[in-house]
Image (cartoon, rainbow, N blue to C red; front, side, top):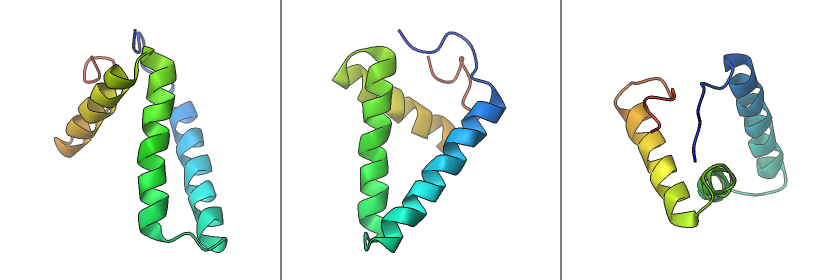
Length: 81
């Protein structure tokens, strides 16, 4: 499993915008930035698990995505294989 086609950029940006707004709401409720960031990582694994179907594969998928970002690469089908 995994992504077979690049997700539309507008959908990616929509989700990022919602996630940033959610982070702002958590902060308003007293969550500190570290808690928000840790929760976001767990959430990324949760969502990746729904995509790839196994917790270990989800962690590997997120790891690959972070490595691609670190290398300055776009998150595409090729960089997330």
